[in-house]
Image (tube, rainbow, N blue to C red; front, side, top):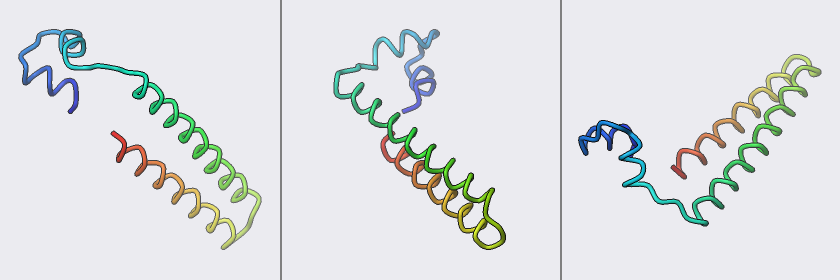
Length: 84
């Protein structure tokens, strides 16, 4: 749930009250976030590679690389959304 929504529902005037009361972070949570950051960095490099290839390609080849970049971005977005 969005923390601001929870703040509103609980009637807290300050978001820090909500966050201190209803959020708990453990080692596994931190580890999962680090993995997600690594995946995001890998996806970013993949997309940048496709864009660079598209810049040096011509015509349909360039469009193919741009389509691959778009697919890589969507895949990354899906992984991020599904994990939240």
